[in-house]
Structures are given as C-alpha cells and as structure tokens.
Image (cartoon, rainbow, N blue to C red; front, top):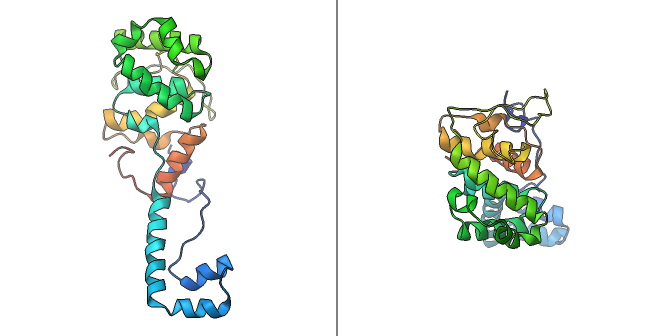
Length: 231
C-alpha cells in the first residue's frame, strides 16, 4: 500500500502556495497595489510582461525546490543517518545539525564513536540536552552497528508500533539502539533507494514527523521522482 502522499487520486495533503499565472492583469488584481488605469497600461507594456513572465518562472522553480534534510545528505551511510536522527529527536535542526557535523569531525566512523569517551562526547552535545543519555546511546549504537551491521537481505522485526495496524514493517535497522519510529521512517525513505535502487518502499512510508511529511508532499506535488528519492 502506497503512502497517501503518492496516491493518484489527489487526496494527499497539499501545500498552500499562491497561484502563479502568466497574466499581469491577474497579479495586479490580487495585489490591489495598482489602480485599474495603471493596470491596463502595464498589461500593454512589453517590458513589464517580459519581466513578469520571468518572475513567474523563477517563482515556480522556487516552489518546486524540495526540502533538503540531513537524512538525504547522508542517505548513503545508514550509520550517519542514525546518528543524525538520534540528535534530531526532540531537538531543532539548527542545534542538532551542527552538533552532528562536529561529532563526525571528531569520531568519523562507527569504530571511532564506539570507542569514544562518554564524558567527552557528552560535552560536545551538552547544549542539546539529555547529553549523557544520548552519548551512551551513540556509543552503543556504533558498537552494535559494527558487530551486527544492517543488511537489505536481513530484515529484523521492528519494536515500534504503526498507527495503521499496530505492526511496523521489519527493516534492516530495527535491531539497533534508538531505532524508533522517526529513525525507521527516515531509513525507509532515504536509505532504501541507495541500497536497493529498484525498491519503491519509500512510497509506502507513513511518517508522523512533520519534516518527513513535508518532504514527501513536496515530491508528490512536483512529481520530481520516478524511481526513488535519491535518483
């Protein structure tokens, strides 16, 4: 079953954006900044019409720009994605993302982070809150990731519940610490296309996180994806 964000019946959530037309008259009527006389004159001005059409094209392109999430940037490395979503959980991106890159600069691989001093790691994420809990989870995650790395050929039973039927699909990362709903949704949306280019599993994800919903709605609205979010 596909996510409603990709349903062909147009019942998926729609982003609210102003309607862009190629008519100078319609824009002026909406803005009410130009009186009817000036409006008629402008609609006959070739330079104005040319500039307006160029503006309309650029505006459509701006609306078509999909959200750029950290999960998409690191989608080729599930370990990095899991580190990122662990920091993002209950934390705004403006704080979590710089902390994520800072961690990678000090501990760039699962081996490095698994061997990290918990107190030192905590000091790097103290401003995020719950730093001791997160630090222990990050080192534990990295250790188990090395011992039992995820594989597309070995799906594990998920411990979280889904809102639809109470059972979340099995995934290759379900056995890892911190693999909650947000992490599982992120993995299925962003990593599956890298690991299995023919997979369209990302279309069946029903995220609850608003940023992930916005990401999928953006693709549905602009129809920019054919075989996967990262192709």
